[in-house]
Image (spheres, rainbow, N blue to C red):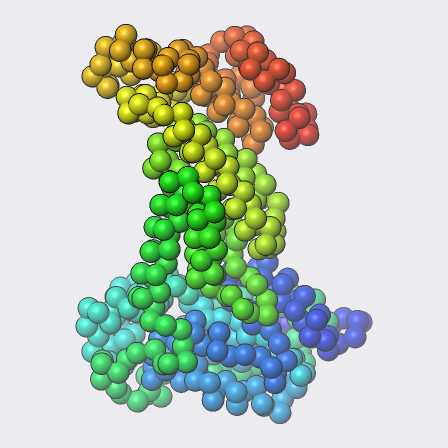
Length: 427
């Protein structure tokens, strides 16, 4: 933090709270750390403390009365870098009548020996306490001080402040500042969030419910489960600034939804085509949480509809197993004999079952799966068409163009242009 350098500007200094929040959003582009912004009088500490506290006994800098004292400080402009005996850190920026609280975060990934050494200075940790501390530490954002310093410099400049106007205070609490307490009393205070382990169990239960509803094809119930899960899992719900790291969240959510559909028996190419379509749309969202939620809802709706359609068709168990094997092996040379051998039935038995249930032959089903996968790749990648054809198991590019045009009534290039709006390499 010593590297904070003044950056002179001719613009008026002392931005209002609206500009401060805009600057905080800029800060969020550099960091994945919780950020709380507001006036000194109205900045709510409860949400911050629910994230920050492992044990109030061990973390004096995260006691409400201590933070309130800093907020009431007479200094107009100051930066407090807080470090507690457990190794976590936070930064409080006082900018005239406004305040910004960044954190908590940790400077390094969890290491068992280091964690044990930290706790051992304060208490004799048992296995249960170590587990709880691991969950706590790994639940905090990971951020180096150099990265934070650069981000704060950018924040101050954008908010029309000069770093030279801010007094810098390093507040480091050590084990000598902590009163010894028995292990039985090392618990989160009532004002903090509910017990961390209980919250983890609740989150897993909500995920299981969401997956169950999707696998059953129940759209309304699945969307309701989605909203319950999002409300519970948003780490910064209710804050002035919503800075949920959406890139990772969206990838995790798509995986959960995709695996739920896979457990229903829905063929992988159908799942992949839908998943890739929404992955492309999500890349352009920025930090729009509401639009992200709507895309989750639409993705779930599409998959549930396919699951219901599959079940309403009344496929036999043999056909379902065959479709699953085809969806796994379509990119490689695959014959009805290969699938029949894996299912331990004759080729004629399998052929009759597929025709009776789907109205299509094995060859037609295999071709359709390959073409659906190719269509998804054309929509979401810039790979050469020959490469896409080979990747889905069709090595003859002329044949690929012919069958693709027959199914989609346009060439692969025209299809790609219609979905992505740009020129790409033709066969």
